[in-house]
Figure 1 (cartoon, one colour):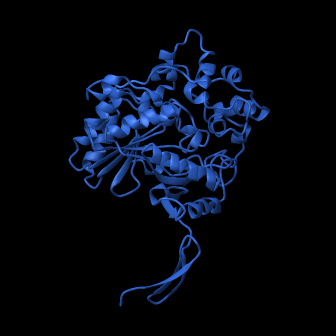
Figure 2 (tube, helix red, strand yellow; figure 1 turned 180 degrees about the horizontal axis):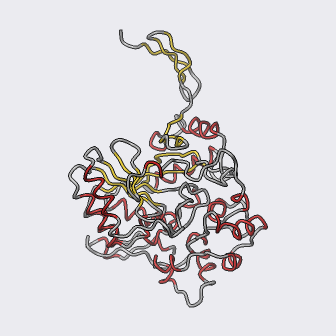
Figure 3 (cartoon, one colour; figure 1 turned 90 degrees about the vertical axis):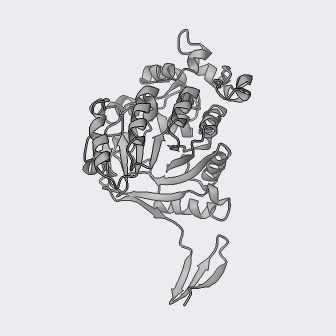
Length: 396
């Protein structure tokens, strides 16, 4: 039985009981753990063990999957761009024989990353120029982005912040957080703080709680969110201790980065159940990626699976033009077509907003199919999802 299928019985009778998954690994997980000497199923469920044993080198990865020449080129050259880091759990989802596996394409470097185009930027969202203090981005009037660390469990190959994650030069300390806290305290228009990184869930519960508690004590901060990919790439990190801590500071919202239905395993469902049952609303921020999720059928499957684990599809992002990203980026028309195939064809809760982050720091710009056929004074001719036309009159 998969670990996400069973929990201790006492959890149903005592609200303070610790809920833990049964530690029985899937065949895919057993295959990967066998490459780690003396590792046990209990180790596999320990998120710190997963972090310590992230796959960082070609020598380890080539034992787990059959590498292609393009992957070897990417792995050997990625240190100049964005290093490789794959938790053993996430590596277990990779098809070892299929170079087009959607998990593999997101996590294993390719030689294409070393090629750049004129339109590509190191900082495509213009975060650095909108950073009043180290680790804080203030672009929108009432909200700030708080980059609390530079580490992720898994380094996504299309990462918007590949210029900074894993480079060891921007790490924040408990002391350096104070400048960010002081800036937020001094700007009473800031009511919303998004805690991101890196990935804030790679921090210890103690450090994360310090950040959240301090923000929650600022009177004008009404809304605190956590941006993370950890529930997808390292669901073992979502422990009862973590969600118990987060619940103390309710409401806490969580934006999670899902890209493909294959990522939604029973183990991920267990982690999301813990979060949802603790009153933490979750939304998904998906990046549109060529060859991974750029087919309407794949995206529809993804948003349906997300709703089943109580994660609301929130955004589809056009892949940012980071350096070496051409092989990931799709035409904008692809994103619009996906929305066209979702809206009206499935429940509204399953339809995210498709956005482009304006290159250079323009912020999120929503794009949608054009449903206005014509406009004449107070009269609108509109079309619906099926192509039928209707006339609506503005009130006079």
